[in-house]
Image 1 (cartoon, helix red, strand yellow):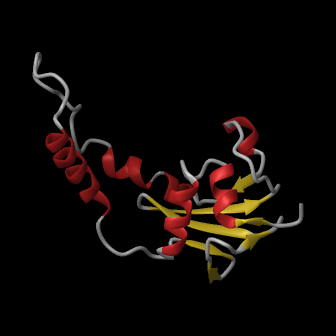
Image 2 (cartoon, one colour; image 1 turned 90 degrees about the vertical axis):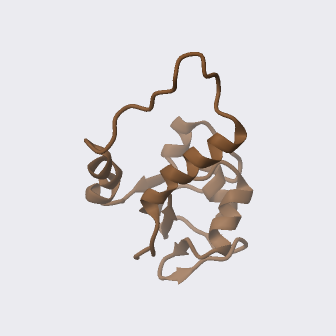
Length: 134
Protein backbone atom coordinates (compact mmCIF):
# COMPACT_ATOMS: atom_id res chain seq x y z
CA UNK A 1 0.00 0.00 0.00
CA UNK A 2 1.74 3.15 -1.22
CA UNK A 3 -1.05 5.70 -0.79
CA UNK A 4 -4.36 5.96 1.09
CA UNK A 5 -7.20 8.47 0.82
CA UNK A 6 -6.74 11.24 3.38
CA UNK A 7 -10.30 10.96 4.73
CA UNK A 8 -9.86 7.23 5.25
CA UNK A 9 -6.47 7.68 6.94
CA UNK A 10 -7.71 10.40 9.33
CA UNK A 11 -10.58 8.14 10.38
CA UNK A 12 -8.36 5.04 10.62
CA UNK A 13 -5.85 6.66 12.98
CA UNK A 14 -8.69 8.05 15.12
CA UNK A 15 -8.23 11.76 14.51
CA UNK A 16 -11.93 11.88 13.58
CA UNK A 17 -14.69 9.65 14.95
CA UNK A 18 -16.16 8.92 11.54
CA UNK A 19 -15.09 9.04 7.95
CA UNK A 20 -17.95 11.43 7.25
CA UNK A 21 -16.66 13.89 9.86
CA UNK A 22 -13.20 13.63 8.33
CA UNK A 23 -14.54 14.26 4.83
CA UNK A 24 -16.63 17.22 6.02
CA UNK A 25 -13.59 18.78 7.74
CA UNK A 26 -11.54 18.31 4.58
CA UNK A 27 -14.26 19.86 2.38
CA UNK A 28 -14.47 22.89 4.68
CA UNK A 29 -10.73 23.53 4.32
CA UNK A 30 -9.62 22.39 7.76
CA UNK A 31 -7.11 19.82 6.51
CA UNK A 32 -3.93 20.37 4.52
CA UNK A 33 -1.43 17.92 3.09
CA UNK A 34 1.89 19.73 2.98
CA UNK A 35 1.19 23.26 1.79
CA UNK A 36 -1.98 22.57 -0.22
CA UNK A 37 -5.57 22.21 0.96
CA UNK A 38 -6.73 18.61 0.79
CA UNK A 39 -9.76 17.08 -0.90
CA UNK A 40 -11.38 13.91 0.54
CA UNK A 41 -10.13 11.80 -2.38
CA UNK A 42 -6.54 13.09 -2.17
CA UNK A 43 -3.96 10.48 -1.29
CA UNK A 44 -1.48 10.68 1.55
CA UNK A 45 1.87 8.88 1.56
CA UNK A 46 4.44 8.01 4.21
CA UNK A 47 6.59 11.01 5.11
CA UNK A 48 4.00 13.67 4.30
CA UNK A 49 2.88 16.31 6.78
CA UNK A 50 -0.85 16.60 7.53
CA UNK A 51 -2.20 19.75 9.19
CA UNK A 52 -5.63 19.60 10.87
CA UNK A 53 -7.73 22.35 12.44
CA UNK A 54 -9.95 20.66 14.99
CA UNK A 55 -11.91 22.14 17.89
CA UNK A 56 -9.77 25.28 18.11
CA UNK A 57 -6.44 23.50 17.82
CA UNK A 58 -3.97 23.48 14.92
CA UNK A 59 -2.63 19.93 14.88
CA UNK A 60 0.38 18.70 12.89
CA UNK A 61 1.07 15.06 12.03
CA UNK A 62 3.84 13.28 10.16
CA UNK A 63 2.54 10.15 8.40
CA UNK A 64 4.64 7.16 9.50
CA UNK A 65 2.47 4.26 8.35
CA UNK A 66 -0.54 3.88 6.08
CA UNK A 67 -3.65 2.03 7.16
CA UNK A 68 -7.15 2.02 5.68
CA UNK A 69 -9.04 0.13 8.41
CA UNK A 70 -9.89 1.60 11.80
CA UNK A 71 -7.70 0.12 14.50
CA UNK A 72 -7.31 0.41 18.25
CA UNK A 73 -5.83 3.56 19.74
CA UNK A 74 -2.55 1.87 20.67
CA UNK A 75 -1.93 0.77 17.08
CA UNK A 76 -3.22 4.05 15.62
CA UNK A 77 -0.66 6.12 17.52
CA UNK A 78 2.13 4.18 15.81
CA UNK A 79 0.91 5.34 12.38
CA UNK A 80 1.76 9.01 12.87
CA UNK A 81 4.07 11.30 14.77
CA UNK A 82 2.33 14.17 16.50
CA UNK A 83 4.45 17.26 15.80
CA UNK A 84 1.96 19.73 17.26
CA UNK A 85 3.82 22.37 19.30
CA UNK A 86 3.41 22.05 23.06
CA UNK A 87 1.97 25.56 23.39
CA UNK A 88 -0.76 24.64 20.90
CA UNK A 89 -1.61 21.48 22.85
CA UNK A 90 -1.77 23.38 26.13
CA UNK A 91 -3.90 26.20 24.68
CA UNK A 92 -7.16 24.85 26.12
CA UNK A 93 -5.63 24.10 29.50
CA UNK A 94 -4.23 27.62 29.75
CA UNK A 95 -7.58 29.14 28.83
CA UNK A 96 -9.62 26.90 31.09
CA UNK A 97 -7.61 26.79 34.32
CA UNK A 98 -9.26 28.97 36.92
CA UNK A 99 -11.97 30.26 34.59
CA UNK A 100 -14.94 28.19 35.67
CA UNK A 101 -16.01 25.98 38.49
CA UNK A 102 -17.27 22.48 38.16
CA UNK A 103 -20.58 22.04 36.37
CA UNK A 104 -23.34 21.42 38.88
CA UNK A 105 -26.92 20.40 38.29
CA UNK A 106 -29.55 20.61 41.00
CA UNK A 107 -30.18 17.36 42.77
CA UNK A 108 -33.26 15.65 41.41
CA UNK A 109 -33.35 17.77 38.25
CA UNK A 110 -32.57 14.74 36.09
CA UNK A 111 -30.81 14.77 32.75
CA UNK A 112 -30.82 17.93 30.65
CA UNK A 113 -33.55 18.13 28.03
CA UNK A 114 -32.57 18.35 24.38
CA UNK A 115 -33.11 22.12 24.47
CA UNK A 116 -31.01 22.52 27.63
CA UNK A 117 -28.25 20.38 26.09
CA UNK A 118 -28.17 22.61 22.99
CA UNK A 119 -27.92 25.70 25.21
CA UNK A 120 -25.08 24.13 27.21
CA UNK A 121 -23.21 23.06 24.07
CA UNK A 122 -23.68 26.49 22.51
CA UNK A 123 -22.27 28.14 25.60
CA UNK A 124 -19.26 25.83 25.62
CA UNK A 125 -18.58 26.28 21.89
CA UNK A 126 -18.30 30.06 22.24
CA UNK A 127 -14.74 29.59 23.52
CA UNK A 128 -13.45 28.84 20.01
CA UNK A 129 -15.22 31.52 17.97
CA UNK A 130 -13.13 33.40 15.45
CA UNK A 131 -10.92 32.72 12.47
CA UNK A 132 -8.38 29.95 12.35
CA UNK A 133 -4.74 30.72 11.75
CA UNK A 134 -2.29 28.44 9.99
